Every structure is written in C-alpha cells, then in structure tokens.
Image (tube, rainbow, N blue to C red):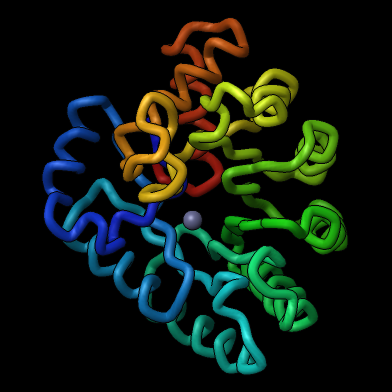
Amino acid sequence: MIDTHCHFFDEEFENDLDECIARCKEFNIEKIVLVGFSYDTNRKAQELAKKYDIFYPTAGVHPEECNSEYKAQFAELVEYIKKNKIYAIGECGLDYHWSTEFVEEQKELFRMQCELAIKLDLPVIVHSRDAAQDTFDIIKSFNGKLKGVMHCYSGSAEMAKEYVKLGMYISLGGPVTFKNAKEPKRVATEIDINRLLIETDSPFLAPDPYRGKRNESSYVRFVLAKIAELKNISVEEAERITTANANALFGLN
Ligand SMILES: [Zn+2]
C-alpha cells in the first residue's frame, strides 16, 4: 500500500514517529508521500525524507497560506525546487472555508503552481474546500495537460468523472469509511479503480474505527478495505491497482 497524502512532520508525531513508521512496515505500507504546504513544512518534509526512506517529499503553497505576498511565495517555491528533489507540487488549490479575503490571489497562486507542475513534468496535489466550481474551472483551463490528484476528494461523483476525463486521479481518505458519508462511497463505486488513490491526510480525518483520533499512515488500510468492499473485489486486487496508480502518477519506482 502507498499512503499518497500524509503530514508526518506534524508536532502530533514528535514523540512516537518511529513507532508510527514501524506500524506502517507491520501493515505493509511501503511508501508514503509526505506533503508539504508552506515554507516550513516543505523543508520539514525534505528533512524527514533524508532520514527515512519510506518518505517521498513534495513542496507547495497551500491556499490558506496565500496572501497579498503570493508572488514572493511562489518565487521562493521555485528557488526551493531548484535545490531539492520533490515528487509533486502541492498541496495547493483553493480554500474558501475560513476566509475569502484573498480569493483572487488564491486562484492566481494555484494557476502558477499548476503551470510550474506542467513545466517541470510533475503531478500536482490539489486541495479544494468550499471552492468546487472554481477549482474545476482552473484545472479544466489546462485542457488535460496537467496531471495530478484531487486529494481527499469530497465533491460529487459527477464532477469526479469530469476530473478523470481531464487526466486527474481521485484520492479517497478516511471519510469514505464513515457511515453517513454517501458521496465518497458513490465516488469509490463509480470511478474506475485505475484512477483511484488512497490516502490518510494524517494527522487529520482518521478512518473508522479510529474516527476522531489522531490519524496515521498505517490506517490507510481501512480506506483500502472499504474501497475493495464497495468495488466488490479482493483487498489484494484493490491494493495492487491503487499501488500501481500511485507509483505511476508520482514516479516512485
Ligand atoms: Zn493535507
């Protein structure tokens, strides 16, 4: 299994990261995409990846980090990427949940990171919250030239199909295991498994039976099991395909 979205550099793990990684090995999680989202976390992801070979670091600027200084933030990211090996741009995207003060700046910064991903032939990891249509419009504007993943996808199954047509992958996390989460289950059922990825987004959004607790990468097995159940295939088959998908998108082989 590959956890395609994790923030193991979070202070929630400062006392027991080694144990968390040991549990990943125990449950056959072979690789973890360690997702940066700011000046500090991009560096933390890089540092941890040097210490543990299970990690594949990324770098990006999250929409909640975006402000009037976005051009300088982007220039800094470009310089950083010149000196550090990364496997994806992001997470980046649009988030109107807490604030819509910098909507235009968010859109511009997201477009710039998409263009950078295309230029560097890297996938983009997309975060979208309360901004479904604007996110879709920006990705569509690249006419299928962009490759990447809609991380912890929470939109409709119909829109997920449109993203797949544009060449994007759909990643599901903890919510697909929640009893009352109808739409993620529809997405898991209706989207071709060749376009699905699994993730935790740890320390957030722990799947059942750990809902509400700290999330960790070894719990990605619960997401995988739920997808296998919904698709009516074996866990082994779901594992083989989602692992191949992640290896192909992020170039992890
Ligand atoms: Zn994240």
